[in-house]
Length: 263
Image (cartoon, rainbow, N blue to C red; front, side, top):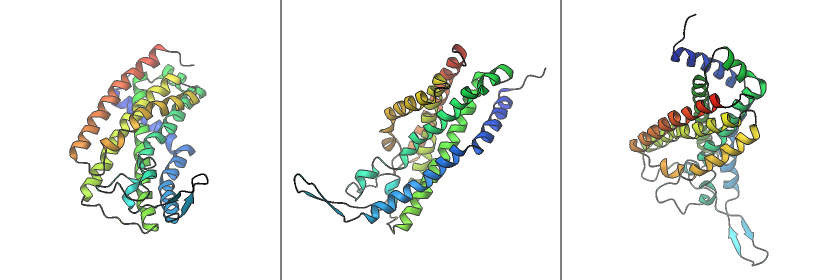
């Protein structure tokens, strides 16, 4: 029998996984949420601009300040720390996609073990390493598309709410580098989620909880690693980090699949 090379085996696995991803309702739901979320959040906060809330116990009045710049959905602008809505956008911005992709990765992998597809796959033709590589790349592509959808939604939301698109001294190159850095950093999170998912196998609830918990350990660092004023150095660091995590955690995931039961 002819022995297929690593690239041929991975290519075959990717064809199957991409076909399954494109037929998955969850994939399109996540993309739709990534696109709609920044639009709704920006428009609703803009409508609430100037509204006053009163503390019933102290009588203290708080004036709600809406967003002032469309790029607040992506990160904090230089000198824009006191912009309206920053309290919300510092946590609820494009960086949420790093955690949202955990839902796709965990359910995508757990479905393989629940349906018996993974056991049949490993028995018939694919080895564990090919499976881990394919799932990591598939999750990375999904995460990248979610980041791009959120970016488009942020631009549309800013346009609908008539917000400023001023970059406060930055240039378009910084914005491009920021998005590239986030895309390559996505590989770090996906590698973590794949590792936890193959360990949890058919227990989707366990993989989701573990992935969200593990992702939160790095989540607060995302804004520092991929700021709006990112340069080529930030992109290079994210590429290096993503590559190391993919190879390192991928090797651990392969060992876990070899040493543990598939049911």
